[in-house]
Length: 373
Image (cartoon, rainbow, N blue to C red; front, side):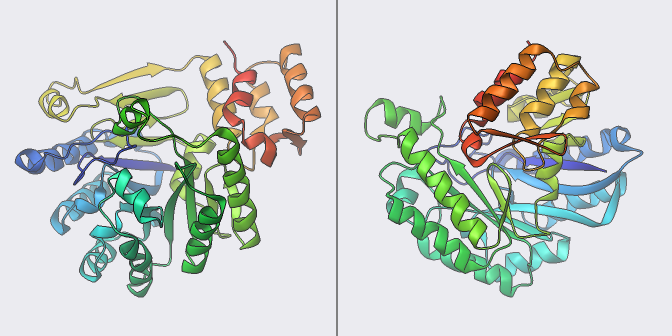
Protein backbone atom coordinates (compact mmCIF):
# COMPACT_ATOMS: atom_id res chain seq x y z
CA UNK A 1 0.00 0.00 0.00
CA UNK A 2 1.13 3.56 -0.65
CA UNK A 3 -0.15 7.13 -0.72
CA UNK A 4 -0.15 10.08 -3.10
CA UNK A 5 0.10 13.69 -1.92
CA UNK A 6 -0.80 16.57 -4.26
CA UNK A 7 0.43 20.02 -3.25
CA UNK A 8 -1.77 22.85 -4.53
CA UNK A 9 0.42 25.97 -4.17
CA UNK A 10 -2.36 28.58 -4.21
CA UNK A 11 -3.98 30.64 -1.44
CA UNK A 12 -6.40 33.58 -1.38
CA UNK A 13 -4.33 35.31 1.27
CA UNK A 14 -1.35 34.59 3.49
CA UNK A 15 -1.95 33.46 7.07
CA UNK A 16 0.33 35.27 9.50
CA UNK A 17 1.88 32.10 10.94
CA UNK A 18 2.20 30.01 7.77
CA UNK A 19 5.54 28.98 6.27
CA UNK A 20 4.18 26.41 3.78
CA UNK A 21 4.85 26.97 0.10
CA UNK A 22 2.14 28.83 -1.84
CA UNK A 23 1.38 31.96 -3.86
CA UNK A 24 -1.49 34.43 -3.65
CA UNK A 25 -0.87 35.69 -7.21
CA UNK A 26 -1.47 32.74 -9.49
CA UNK A 27 -4.34 33.31 -11.91
CA UNK A 28 -2.06 34.03 -14.90
CA UNK A 29 -0.41 30.58 -14.64
CA UNK A 30 -3.11 28.61 -12.83
CA UNK A 31 -4.02 26.46 -15.87
CA UNK A 32 -0.36 25.71 -16.62
CA UNK A 33 0.27 24.68 -13.00
CA UNK A 34 -2.62 22.22 -12.89
CA UNK A 35 -1.60 20.74 -16.25
CA UNK A 36 2.02 20.37 -15.12
CA UNK A 37 1.03 18.64 -11.88
CA UNK A 38 -1.04 16.29 -14.05
CA UNK A 39 2.02 15.62 -16.21
CA UNK A 40 4.10 14.86 -13.13
CA UNK A 41 1.50 12.35 -11.93
CA UNK A 42 1.71 10.51 -15.27
CA UNK A 43 5.50 10.81 -15.50
CA UNK A 44 6.04 9.09 -12.15
CA UNK A 45 3.61 6.19 -12.53
CA UNK A 46 6.45 3.63 -12.47
CA UNK A 47 7.39 4.62 -8.90
CA UNK A 48 4.31 2.96 -7.43
CA UNK A 49 3.66 0.48 -10.23
CA UNK A 50 3.38 -2.64 -8.09
CA UNK A 51 1.51 -1.24 -5.08
CA UNK A 52 -2.07 -0.25 -4.38
CA UNK A 53 -2.83 3.37 -3.53
CA UNK A 54 -4.60 3.47 -0.17
CA UNK A 55 -4.78 7.25 0.21
CA UNK A 56 -4.84 10.42 -1.86
CA UNK A 57 -4.34 13.72 -0.09
CA UNK A 58 -4.85 17.22 -1.54
CA UNK A 59 -2.85 19.64 0.61
CA UNK A 60 -1.37 23.07 0.22
CA UNK A 61 -1.77 25.95 0.06
CA UNK A 62 -5.53 25.82 -0.25
CA UNK A 63 -6.80 22.89 -2.35
CA UNK A 64 -10.41 24.00 -1.85
CA UNK A 65 -9.61 26.82 -4.33
CA UNK A 66 -9.74 24.23 -7.13
CA UNK A 67 -12.80 24.24 -9.36
CA UNK A 68 -14.66 21.14 -10.51
CA UNK A 69 -12.69 20.69 -13.71
CA UNK A 70 -9.28 21.08 -12.01
CA UNK A 71 -10.00 18.66 -9.19
CA UNK A 72 -11.53 16.06 -11.50
CA UNK A 73 -8.61 16.40 -13.93
CA UNK A 74 -6.07 15.56 -11.22
CA UNK A 75 -8.12 12.70 -9.80
CA UNK A 76 -8.60 11.23 -13.26
CA UNK A 77 -4.84 11.43 -13.85
CA UNK A 78 -4.22 9.47 -10.67
CA UNK A 79 -6.81 6.80 -11.46
CA UNK A 80 -5.48 6.46 -15.02
CA UNK A 81 -1.89 5.88 -13.90
CA UNK A 82 -2.13 4.07 -10.56
CA UNK A 83 -3.96 1.17 -8.98
CA UNK A 84 -6.23 3.01 -6.54
CA UNK A 85 -8.00 0.90 -3.94
CA UNK A 86 -11.79 1.09 -4.26
CA UNK A 87 -12.01 2.16 -0.60
CA UNK A 88 -9.06 4.57 -0.69
CA UNK A 89 -9.17 7.55 1.64
CA UNK A 90 -9.32 10.70 -0.54
CA UNK A 91 -8.84 13.86 1.53
CA UNK A 92 -9.24 17.50 0.58
CA UNK A 93 -7.99 20.29 2.83
CA UNK A 94 -10.61 23.02 2.87
CA UNK A 95 -11.05 26.48 4.34
CA UNK A 96 -14.44 27.26 5.92
CA UNK A 97 -15.02 30.21 3.56
CA UNK A 98 -14.75 27.88 0.54
CA UNK A 99 -17.40 25.49 1.83
CA UNK A 100 -20.88 25.73 0.31
CA UNK A 101 -23.57 23.20 -0.53
CA UNK A 102 -22.61 23.44 -4.20
CA UNK A 103 -18.89 22.92 -3.53
CA UNK A 104 -19.55 20.01 -1.19
CA UNK A 105 -21.69 18.28 -3.80
CA UNK A 106 -18.96 18.80 -6.39
CA UNK A 107 -16.27 17.37 -4.11
CA UNK A 108 -18.39 14.38 -3.18
CA UNK A 109 -19.33 13.62 -6.79
CA UNK A 110 -15.65 13.86 -7.76
CA UNK A 111 -14.64 11.17 -5.26
CA UNK A 112 -13.55 13.16 -2.21
CA UNK A 113 -14.63 11.17 0.86
CA UNK A 114 -12.79 12.99 3.65
CA UNK A 115 -12.47 16.70 4.49
CA UNK A 116 -9.79 18.38 6.60
CA UNK A 117 -11.15 21.79 7.59
CA UNK A 118 -8.90 24.52 8.98
CA UNK A 119 -10.95 26.09 11.77
CA UNK A 120 -7.91 27.05 13.94
CA UNK A 121 -9.84 29.15 16.49
CA UNK A 122 -13.31 30.23 17.59
CA UNK A 123 -12.07 33.63 18.71
CA UNK A 124 -12.56 36.50 16.24
CA UNK A 125 -9.51 38.42 17.41
CA UNK A 126 -7.34 35.35 16.78
CA UNK A 127 -8.69 34.88 13.27
CA UNK A 128 -8.02 38.56 12.60
CA UNK A 129 -4.35 38.62 13.58
CA UNK A 130 -3.85 35.25 11.87
CA UNK A 131 -5.26 36.87 8.70
CA UNK A 132 -7.64 33.97 8.21
CA UNK A 133 -10.23 34.47 5.48
CA UNK A 134 -13.14 32.96 7.43
CA UNK A 135 -15.26 34.14 10.35
CA UNK A 136 -16.24 32.38 13.57
CA UNK A 137 -19.76 32.02 12.17
CA UNK A 138 -18.41 30.23 9.10
CA UNK A 139 -16.29 27.98 11.32
CA UNK A 140 -19.37 26.99 13.29
CA UNK A 141 -21.63 26.41 10.28
CA UNK A 142 -19.35 24.74 7.71
CA UNK A 143 -19.02 21.42 9.53
CA UNK A 144 -22.77 21.00 9.89
CA UNK A 145 -23.18 21.83 6.21
CA UNK A 146 -20.59 19.19 5.30
CA UNK A 147 -22.38 16.59 7.43
CA UNK A 148 -25.71 17.42 5.78
CA UNK A 149 -24.05 16.94 2.41
CA UNK A 150 -23.16 13.36 3.30
CA UNK A 151 -19.57 13.62 4.49
CA UNK A 152 -19.02 11.22 7.40
CA UNK A 153 -15.24 11.53 7.67
CA UNK A 154 -14.48 15.08 8.75
CA UNK A 155 -11.34 16.36 10.44
CA UNK A 156 -10.92 19.85 11.86
CA UNK A 157 -7.75 21.74 12.79
CA UNK A 158 -7.19 23.74 15.97
CA UNK A 159 -4.18 25.74 17.14
CA UNK A 160 -3.19 26.01 20.80
CA UNK A 161 -0.52 28.08 22.47
CA UNK A 162 -1.96 31.24 20.94
CA UNK A 163 -1.08 34.66 22.41
CA UNK A 164 -3.49 35.66 25.19
CA UNK A 165 -5.47 32.41 24.90
CA UNK A 166 -6.76 31.62 28.38
CA UNK A 167 -7.39 28.09 29.59
CA UNK A 168 -11.13 28.81 29.73
CA UNK A 169 -11.10 29.95 26.11
CA UNK A 170 -9.13 26.87 25.11
CA UNK A 171 -11.61 24.60 26.90
CA UNK A 172 -14.38 26.38 25.00
CA UNK A 173 -12.62 25.69 21.68
CA UNK A 174 -12.28 22.00 22.54
CA UNK A 175 -15.91 21.77 23.62
CA UNK A 176 -17.02 23.42 20.37
CA UNK A 177 -15.35 20.77 18.20
CA UNK A 178 -16.60 17.95 20.44
CA UNK A 179 -20.13 19.32 20.03
CA UNK A 180 -19.68 19.32 16.25
CA UNK A 181 -19.47 15.52 16.42
CA UNK A 182 -16.61 15.24 13.95
CA UNK A 183 -14.60 12.07 13.51
CA UNK A 184 -11.10 13.52 13.71
CA UNK A 185 -9.26 16.48 15.24
CA UNK A 186 -5.75 17.74 14.51
CA UNK A 187 -4.31 20.22 17.01
CA UNK A 188 -1.01 22.02 16.58
CA UNK A 189 0.97 24.24 18.90
CA UNK A 190 1.62 27.68 17.43
CA UNK A 191 5.20 27.84 16.21
CA UNK A 192 6.90 31.09 15.31
CA UNK A 193 8.70 30.29 12.06
CA UNK A 194 11.29 32.50 10.42
CA UNK A 195 10.24 34.37 7.27
CA UNK A 196 6.63 34.66 8.46
CA UNK A 197 4.59 37.73 9.29
CA UNK A 198 4.13 36.31 12.78
CA UNK A 199 7.88 36.30 13.36
CA UNK A 200 7.99 39.98 12.38
CA UNK A 201 5.14 40.79 14.77
CA UNK A 202 6.91 38.95 17.59
CA UNK A 203 10.20 40.73 16.90
CA UNK A 204 8.36 44.06 16.93
CA UNK A 205 6.76 42.99 20.25
CA UNK A 206 3.27 43.46 18.80
CA UNK A 207 2.50 39.84 19.71
CA UNK A 208 3.81 37.93 22.72
CA UNK A 209 3.80 34.14 22.21
CA UNK A 210 2.45 31.88 24.91
CA UNK A 211 5.05 30.43 27.27
CA UNK A 212 5.99 26.74 27.37
CA UNK A 213 4.01 26.14 30.56
CA UNK A 214 0.80 27.47 28.99
CA UNK A 215 1.40 25.40 25.86
CA UNK A 216 1.96 22.26 27.91
CA UNK A 217 -1.13 22.83 30.04
CA UNK A 218 -3.29 23.35 26.96
CA UNK A 219 -1.90 20.22 25.30
CA UNK A 220 -2.62 18.07 28.36
CA UNK A 221 -6.12 19.56 28.71
CA UNK A 222 -6.77 18.82 25.04
CA UNK A 223 -5.66 15.21 25.38
CA UNK A 224 -7.71 14.69 28.55
CA UNK A 225 -10.94 16.18 27.21
CA UNK A 226 -10.78 14.45 23.84
CA UNK A 227 -9.97 11.05 25.33
CA UNK A 228 -12.95 11.51 27.65
CA UNK A 229 -15.07 12.30 24.59
CA UNK A 230 -14.11 9.00 22.96
CA UNK A 231 -11.18 10.05 20.76
CA UNK A 232 -8.01 8.00 20.44
CA UNK A 233 -4.87 10.10 20.85
CA UNK A 234 -3.07 8.04 18.24
CA UNK A 235 -0.36 10.57 17.31
CA UNK A 236 0.95 13.63 19.13
CA UNK A 237 -1.10 16.12 17.13
CA UNK A 238 -3.96 13.87 16.05
CA UNK A 239 -7.08 12.43 17.62
CA UNK A 240 -9.59 10.15 15.94
CA UNK A 241 -12.75 8.31 16.81
CA UNK A 242 -12.09 4.54 16.59
CA UNK A 243 -11.81 3.59 12.93
CA UNK A 244 -11.30 7.18 11.78
CA UNK A 245 -7.56 7.58 12.23
CA UNK A 246 -6.20 9.34 9.13
CA UNK A 247 -4.87 6.69 6.75
CA UNK A 248 -2.64 9.06 4.81
CA UNK A 249 -0.89 10.69 7.77
CA UNK A 250 -0.72 7.43 9.72
CA UNK A 251 1.22 5.92 6.85
CA UNK A 252 3.76 8.77 7.08
CA UNK A 253 4.49 7.78 10.66
CA UNK A 254 4.57 4.08 9.85
CA UNK A 255 7.14 4.56 7.11
CA UNK A 256 4.79 3.53 4.29
CA UNK A 257 5.86 4.80 0.84
CA UNK A 258 4.26 7.96 -0.50
CA UNK A 259 4.70 10.07 -3.59
CA UNK A 260 4.34 13.85 -3.50
CA UNK A 261 3.60 15.87 -6.64
CA UNK A 262 3.51 19.62 -7.19
CA UNK A 263 5.87 22.38 -6.01
CA UNK A 264 7.56 21.65 -2.63
CA UNK A 265 5.96 18.18 -2.33
CA UNK A 266 8.05 15.45 -0.68
CA UNK A 267 8.26 11.73 -1.46
CA UNK A 268 9.62 8.79 0.55
CA UNK A 269 10.04 5.07 -0.12
CA UNK A 270 11.93 3.89 2.97
CA UNK A 271 15.41 4.25 1.52
CA UNK A 272 15.15 7.40 -0.60
CA UNK A 273 13.74 10.86 -0.01
CA UNK A 274 12.81 13.25 -2.79
CA UNK A 275 11.53 16.82 -2.76
CA UNK A 276 10.28 19.13 -5.48
CA UNK A 277 11.54 22.67 -5.81
CA UNK A 278 9.67 25.18 -3.60
CA UNK A 279 9.20 27.78 -6.30
CA UNK A 280 6.21 27.85 -8.63
CA UNK A 281 7.88 29.49 -11.62
CA UNK A 282 11.01 27.30 -11.39
CA UNK A 283 8.87 24.17 -11.03
CA UNK A 284 7.06 25.08 -14.25
CA UNK A 285 10.18 26.12 -16.17
CA UNK A 286 12.35 23.21 -15.08
CA UNK A 287 9.77 20.44 -15.35
CA UNK A 288 10.48 19.68 -19.01
CA UNK A 289 14.20 19.19 -18.31
CA UNK A 290 13.47 16.98 -15.28
CA UNK A 291 15.36 19.46 -13.06
CA UNK A 292 12.45 20.28 -10.76
CA UNK A 293 13.44 18.07 -7.83
CA UNK A 294 16.28 16.83 -5.64
CA UNK A 295 16.71 13.50 -3.90
CA UNK A 296 18.93 11.65 -1.48
CA UNK A 297 19.56 8.06 -0.51
CA UNK A 298 19.15 7.46 3.20
CA UNK A 299 22.03 5.86 5.08
CA UNK A 300 21.30 3.19 7.67
CA UNK A 301 21.72 5.88 10.32
CA UNK A 302 19.20 8.09 8.50
CA UNK A 303 16.74 5.20 8.36
CA UNK A 304 17.20 4.54 12.09
CA UNK A 305 16.59 8.23 12.90
CA UNK A 306 13.52 8.30 10.64
CA UNK A 307 12.00 5.30 12.42
CA UNK A 308 12.67 6.81 15.86
CA UNK A 309 11.43 10.29 14.97
CA UNK A 310 8.17 9.20 13.35
CA UNK A 311 7.44 6.15 15.48
CA UNK A 312 7.71 7.91 18.82
CA UNK A 313 4.99 10.33 17.68
CA UNK A 314 2.45 7.48 17.65
CA UNK A 315 0.74 5.45 20.36
CA UNK A 316 2.00 2.25 18.74
CA UNK A 317 5.54 3.52 19.19
CA UNK A 318 8.80 2.13 17.81
CA UNK A 319 9.28 -1.60 17.31
CA UNK A 320 12.56 -2.67 18.88
CA UNK A 321 13.00 -5.41 16.27
CA UNK A 322 12.83 -2.80 13.51
CA UNK A 323 15.71 -0.93 15.12
CA UNK A 324 17.75 -4.05 15.80
CA UNK A 325 17.52 -4.93 12.11
CA UNK A 326 19.62 -1.82 11.45
CA UNK A 327 21.98 -1.63 14.46
CA UNK A 328 22.53 -3.41 17.80
CA UNK A 329 21.03 -1.64 20.81
CA UNK A 330 24.24 -0.23 22.25
CA UNK A 331 25.02 1.07 25.74
CA UNK A 332 24.10 4.68 24.85
CA UNK A 333 20.65 3.48 23.75
CA UNK A 334 20.13 1.46 26.93
CA UNK A 335 21.19 4.36 29.17
CA UNK A 336 18.86 6.80 27.40
CA UNK A 337 15.98 4.34 27.66
CA UNK A 338 16.53 3.76 31.39
CA UNK A 339 16.75 7.50 32.04
CA UNK A 340 13.50 8.29 30.24
CA UNK A 341 11.73 5.34 31.83
CA UNK A 342 12.83 6.54 35.26
CA UNK A 343 11.46 10.03 34.49
CA UNK A 344 8.12 8.58 33.39
CA UNK A 345 8.49 9.72 29.79
CA UNK A 346 8.79 6.37 27.98
CA UNK A 347 7.01 3.05 28.34
CA UNK A 348 8.45 -0.25 27.10
CA UNK A 349 5.55 -2.59 26.32
CA UNK A 350 5.22 -5.52 23.92
CA UNK A 351 8.72 -4.89 22.61
CA UNK A 352 7.78 -1.35 21.59
CA UNK A 353 8.93 2.04 22.87
CA UNK A 354 6.16 4.60 23.27
CA UNK A 355 5.89 8.00 24.91
CA UNK A 356 3.72 8.77 27.91
CA UNK A 357 1.65 11.98 27.95
CA UNK A 358 4.49 13.56 29.89
CA UNK A 359 6.98 12.36 27.30
CA UNK A 360 4.94 13.73 24.41
CA UNK A 361 5.62 17.22 25.71
CA UNK A 362 9.30 16.67 24.85
CA UNK A 363 8.95 14.31 21.90
CA UNK A 364 11.54 15.94 19.66
CA UNK A 365 14.16 16.08 22.41
CA UNK A 366 13.58 12.47 23.44
CA UNK A 367 13.80 11.25 19.84
CA UNK A 368 17.05 13.17 19.34
CA UNK A 369 18.61 11.36 22.31
CA UNK A 370 18.21 8.06 20.44
CA UNK A 371 19.49 9.35 17.09
CA UNK A 372 22.54 7.93 15.36
CA UNK A 373 24.95 10.69 14.40
